[in-house]
Image: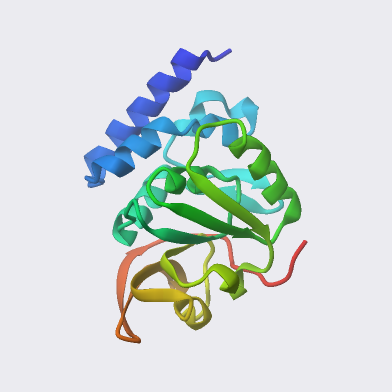
Amino acid sequence: METELDFTIARRRMVVEQLASRGITDERILDAFGRVPRHLFVDPAIGNRAYDDCSFPIGYAQTISQPYIQALMIQHLGVGPRDKVLEIGTGSGYQTAVLSLLCREVFSVERIGALSKKAAEILGRIDTGRIRLRINDGSSGWQFYSPYDRIIVSAVMNARPDHLIEQLADKGTLIAPVDSGSECLVLYKKLDGKFNEQRLAPCSFVPLLKGVE
């Protein structure tokens, strides 16, 4: 049976071996990943394997992504302490917790009600920054609180996310996995009402689905 010390050691090893050694250089990001107890967001039977660099099922055909991919996306996103961040796909709530330690406030949308409620329960037990959760179709974003400085999408889209780009503030940045023949992380930057895009790296995510469950 793992102890809190076991989890702390595993978490530190994750930060050093999986993140810092592979090019995650932002100290704020490394610190945030070192603070959030990932083992609380997965099946307890997984134990300290929660800190392995792999994804795990969280129910409802959804997964918690591998730590390196999450850290890579957040680093490319360039989250600052004064930023409003929109997260599409709350999932387990782990990435939500990490983001909340890096920005002013996270607005996170999840289409599966049971997942959102479970995430809310776990997030309520740990130290986080400001978080607002919503159960809704993530493809429509969260118009009411827009514009956002940063938007991160945690499910693969089959086209450029124009509706979400509309909710970006000027000089804002959006990162999303997009499938245009093959899945790839794409970074969109908005400036003076226009945007450019940069393809970053191959990836594999669950699909972004419409509707609410």
